[in-house]
Image (tube, rainbow, N blue to C red; front, side, top):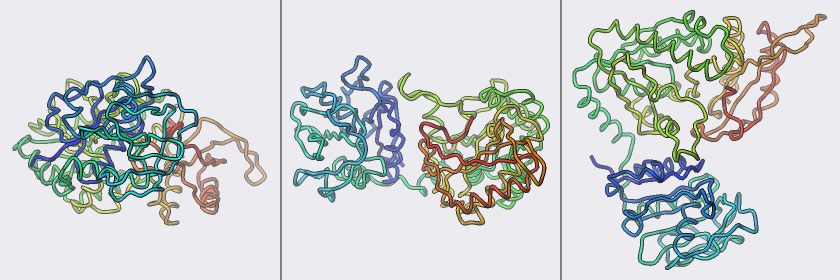
Length: 511
């Protein structure tokens, strides 16, 4: 089945992925491409959205897209930088803003009988984020909305299906943002809303059957949502020809290897558990640098996985749980704006010697979509609701070098923290939680004795996709009890702190 597609051109905005996800929430398929790498099959897209950008259209480094096959030929929505770009280079004027146009604002004027603003009323809250402002509309521009501080908050261009806005409809703070996108994509551009979990499952299973045939596929399971949903999809398509390997790298949560293995076998998957803890700890000995630790863990995993894969006769495919943000983040959008924050271990990381072809069933979808697909597949809600856990595991939550004793300490601390969140009914209010073992000792008193032991930091964040995150305001009573339990029950720890930094500027993990 051919779905209507939306092309989103990325100018390096931190919100670009949010645009794509909002479009997907409308059951419309969307793709993100760098502004300077417009697909050659652009005619296949029924609408185009230009993202925001950290750059200014007035600067020497202004980003210039080639809109020759888009402008006036397809419905076009220009957001923030896109709106200023169309104005600045089409007869309008963009200037530095006199007032700081950042944060919440309210629409004070909406032009009547505009389908773009159907079901949206004056006073609707929008989110501004720019230092420039449009002083004069472009040629044939028609003003269709204003806020108290921004006269040209939205405009359209006569003779084209081109709309432009100086606010961000994709963020939650824009209360009618989803309605605005629906007005543009469905009412104006005429796209069909047929991109659903059911259609994704049906098409993906069919795709796997055609691509893989009767070949054997090996998949490394991690216990996480992505690899689990990938496994169930593959199992639905090829059954006994799927061979799953679950490797214990010694950096999993307490009892996780045994618990997850039992859960997988209960799901009817063909799974082999491999305990390679000592091999990973040996590979990590003496390494303190976070990126070197990631590489050491990744290399050890590939070696163990390769050893196991070779025990399966005639295996020709490697399946991976790669999801869409992994693909986007691993390709810098413009050779500049979207910098790589950390290396991803599951995109393009395969050594040549494995000689396996790749199948990635989830490559086109976001994390929230993965969960919706998993729910439709009937996967246990407890497994689908699991917090994300980093591929390198506790290896990047132990700051500094890694030893078996440090792993033991952090596993115990993490166990108390995560179980506490579940017991207090807080687990599902948190997107991701974990504990960090810090490379500092501090003085404490236990009984009448002076101690000099480790400090651990607890971290709990709320987020939708991990791109941005806020710390969770956990109850003081919970934090107090958790701290007491950790200090009293985990030998080697005498101090607990709680991380209250948001992303950005901090990352969710400490390494």
